[in-house]
Image (cartoon, rainbow, N blue to C red; front, side, top):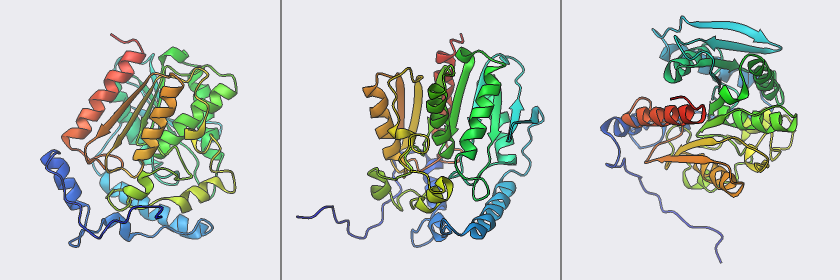
Length: 322
């Protein structure tokens, strides 16, 4: 008896059920043979720290090239313990706070990328955004990033009441956002009003179905990230809830949560399984699955604007803003 389903070699077409802009993004993301461009990059082994540093430098250059012309003048930089924090203050609504934890597989995406994101979230939600430029491996493996998120959360609690705080993150940031709430609860801290998790990387063991079914179908994240996960964990148990929040206990007052993914997202199972875990714990949770969306979205298609609008509605509702 077989333990799986054999899939014959085939090309999965770009669906007509999504916007023209989303279709164009999927087409741009593969070569003439239909191979995802991102699959042509090989991740270093977990113990190849010099290789990771070279890749981090290369990715930082790619981020910089994509951010030419973007500005965020209303963002100030300060430090909280070992964390660099970017605070963006809106024209109104400054009493409300959003802690943004950037994505990037737990090894990329800090610096200017995190600073610009803080400005965008402040403008999107009309609240004060604290973007955390957390420390990352190979120089700072677990628990450095989570320590930085916790330090920032304690700082924000000193300036905003918990019922006016939302924590959010995309991908790796979703991992840290959920882990921050679990650890804050364990340490006896008051919990935020709500949590926003976009295509969250909440299972570093990569045990979900979509890690196989959506492998290479996701043009943004075509292959699993186990070498990255092992680099981040530095020997810690990948199944511990502070590393894989999917396996946490959500019963004791976990905040209302917004969870998003797409049918082509490598992390789709993360979102589906987290949604079920939260439902079983009777936590208010919204699940948004977008047609044919890969990891991280369509890079500016109408579906991305729709997702942003859904986030705004969710955040306003749980902050009790009229």
